[in-house]
Length: 81
Image 1: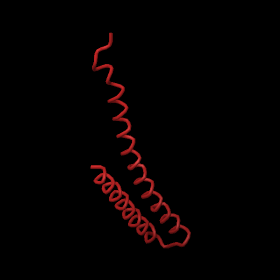
Image 2: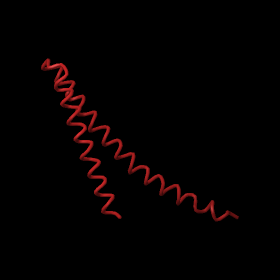
Image 3: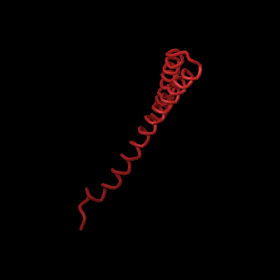
Image 4: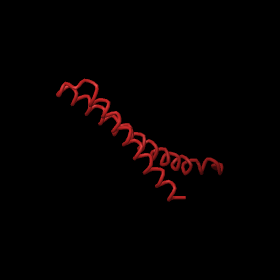
């Protein structure tokens, strides 16, 4: 016969994996948006020849994008509560 704690383990594990997947998705989205704009700035610098300017612009745009994603997530979390 199974003990009550062992019967509930799959439920707890499933809930924690779902919660973790939400946060991992947010982290991946933030990292991907930042990396996209940084690499876009680097690529544009190599084509045009404006050494660090467009790379820095890509960093700034990527950081603004990260802030917007975080604001969106915080607003959604506040609505759930």
